[in-house]
Image (cartoon, rainbow, N blue to C red):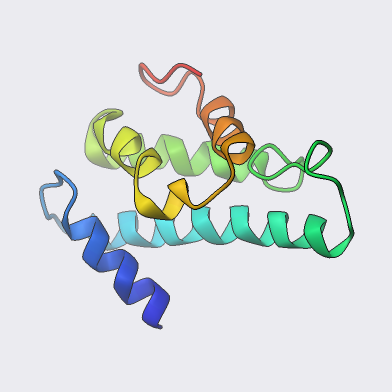
Length: 114
């Protein structure tokens, strides 16, 4: 899949030591982006206003988003990679309110604070 290949190339640019767990990290990031975009698109299709829209904190996916953040933290030994992902092109393409929801969903993982 082209989107996944592009994301893999961008992830290679992160300050990440390549391990057997790198594939897990790529899958987790891909799942995180897919969850967020799917929620946003569902609300857009349902004509939900931006003020009322939820993405990463939506009840259907929040627990999984938090679990993904925890797993990324565990795989990489801290929040450095989480912060780099948060600042990545893929997540910067989300509106600010959606990125803020991701910050809140990850609040309390390691030293991550919203």
